[in-house]
Image (cartoon, rainbow over all chains, first blue to last red):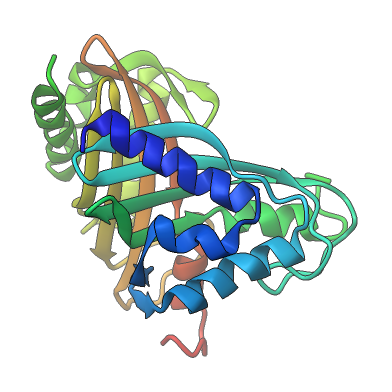
Amino acid sequence: MTDLDLEDRYRGYLMCLNERRFPDLSEFVHNPVVHNDRTLSITEFQDLLRRDAAEIPDLHYAIERLVVQGEQVACRIRFDCTPAASFRGIPPTGRPISFVEHVFYRYRDGRIAEIWSLIDMETIREQLTPGHPDR
Amino acid sequence: MTDLDLEDRYRGYLMCLNERRFPDLSEFVHNPVVHNDRTLSITEFQDLLRRDAAEIPDLHYAIERLVVQGEQVACRIRFDCTPAASFRGIPPTGRPISFVEHVFYRYRDGRIAEIWSLIDMETIREQLTPGHPDR
């Protein structure tokens, strides 16, 4: 698989998430998959992503930077969205927030085997904290 | 410049940081450089990295994942270290901490032109908070 093929595969994965086709995730992700050093069954992984989308109904994965090499993908993803319920334990305000995720993937045989994700929780917390100067 | 050449350049940059050769940074970084959407002179950028190394004398940049494509580099960097002074506003405890940075770089003519860095501040905060269950 060339870097361009893998890039297409990865874009297909994010499209799957943006279209909320969670049952199709197994096309893109191994079972089990390792996520931030935890081994998850595909069902547990689907539940994780379903929960994010339930807490933030307009969650949309937008690529800002994408780097593909061999069986590795790295992506900076921008989210401009409005949480409707508590997200990662922080209650919503009804107002929109903007934050990024920096995430690395290791593919194996065309599907994601390992994920290392870092979300800018500090920015989320600041934007969801009443009276914070950023708001 | 091939992906392998760029990887070498990037490893040279981290070695420069690990060896505290801050005056040599201009070999690896443009002046000015854009860091998390702020435009910094090379002197301001050197001061930023000097400050990190002053607060954490044993700061060592260890590559965990490295992805190189065209003029882009993405790296997951592990830090196992012991802050000696307040780091990003959080007082030290005298005990070691472990955290990661996920960082994207855009190169231009073999030197870093733009940086998008995300540090796992949540993990740092947890490890430096007295009485936290992780400690």
